[in-house]
Image (cartoon, rainbow, N blue to C red; front, side):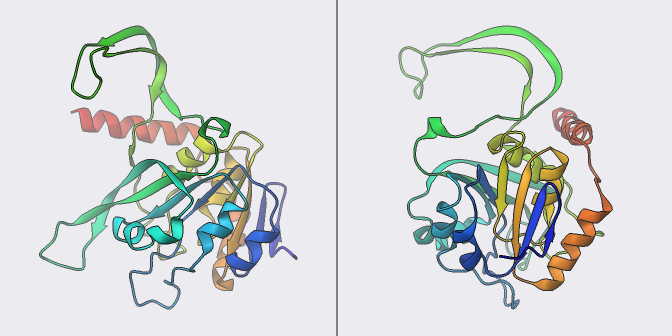
Length: 258
């Protein structure tokens, strides 16, 4: 295959993910935002069978989507085991109906295959170092008679609800995900120097974040106009540092506590 673009960290292929995925090297994880299939737009078509093709490349996958999408496409995700779910909280939202709650979130579900213990997993942490605390919980209905004990030490562990402003005003893609929400998923599942694959690259956020955090990325994008936008974005350089990400998350948690 001939890359559409390539640098020391990012390789971009223009084409169909179903055709390209079987030709890729093994990766640490998939991080992707597939077409949800919820609109009448020409590009918004879920490619049947892509999760099975992705399984040939990596043992774990972060997949963005709506609850409706995951329920409707659960048959296509057969063989993947659900590990956890992340909620992306936006600063704004959208609604096509005036008789439903205004939707200001999306999901990122973490799937895996094989043995859980064989996966790379490193939960991002942020904030000031905390002193060591021993916490013991007594008998509860869900913990049983023995209760549970844990130790808290070091920085704060990131929560499963992550606030990140959407890309309104500067997005180059209709469903562009902000770097602030992609970065923790990539850091969790891909070691430094490791390889991530994005089957539906869109605006190239996965590639930009991978390069910024010293990972490698292979991107696949079907629309050539988007490939051109990805190349332009990557050539512009870094827009967000690791400290920026931590500071934004910490500021949001402080706001929530108030």
